Amino acid sequence: MKPFVPTFYICHPKKYIYIKNPKCACSSVLTQMYDWGHIDKKPVHSKQHNEVNMRMKEGFRPDYFKFSFVRNPWSRFVSLFQDKTKTIIGTKWEMRKWRKYKDYNFEQFAREMSKRNVNAIDRHSRFQYINLNRNVGLDFYGRVESFNEDMSSVAKKIGLDIADVPWVNKQASIKDYRDYYNKETIKIVGDIYKKDIDVFGYTFDGQKW
Image (cartoon, rainbow, N blue to C red; front, side, top):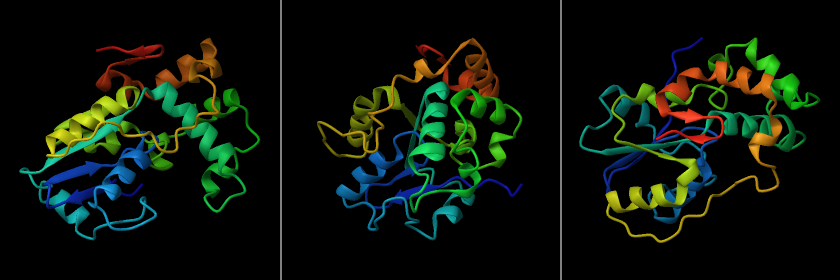
């Protein structure tokens, strides 16, 4: 497996860096950055700066505010399953690596992922801890569960004042993530993402602060 390089978006005028963590309200953060005029391309998930990886190797600017978002691993896993193996199948966003699971139910998918190295598939299944550069140099991580409040805190930190940030691409039609699970799959996903659970302090039913 090639060495992993986190994805960064840099805003020089406001001196901040957003570290992308897939399935954790990325579209919302990037849309807000676009609305602020801090990134200049659409779609918002396109690469914005050629200097991003170079900056990481330089210590990605210690004078810049660096932030990201994390999510309950059990909830994130449901989002991965629903989006990559169901919602985007048959669209231009379909991905071959996930298409083969299109006929799997959730329990089958969880069992299959337990046999694989999720860090070797792609960013959507990779540990959040790794996506966030193992927390090296990170100043702040918000939580998807308190997205509006935490994104407002980010805005104030970089000198902006916002009252409300909508969660873009939130899969409102999906039932509560807990409804997907039984005792077996709770343990399976908990075992897969033990590192994220330990680092970010999550439990199945909610956050442990």
